[in-house]
Length: 111
View 1 (spheres, rainbow, N blue to C red):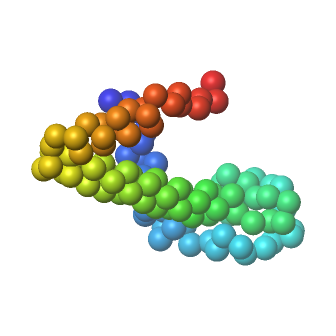
View 2 (tube, rainbow, N blue to C red):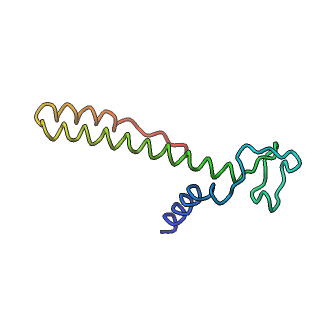
View 3 (cartoon, rainbow, N blue to C red):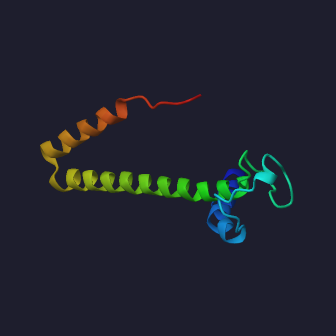
């Protein structure tokens, strides 16, 4: 439950955050470079760009990429499953073996 709450908060921050935190992601303020202040609560980078604004904008892009990947995977899965279920027989067997080849490849993990 804690993980789900944190995930929901992150999604809410990335969807609503850019409307609340109105600093531009490419606004350069060389006087505020590499500093924390009330104007830059998460600090700024070496060009003075606000880190919070860039995180909020980057989160929106990450969510969009994740949703697009999920939609492609679900669409392909539903189509393959529908074809295998509708026709059955040797087509079902062929599609099942094809999917099993992909499932037999080990997943790459960083840890």
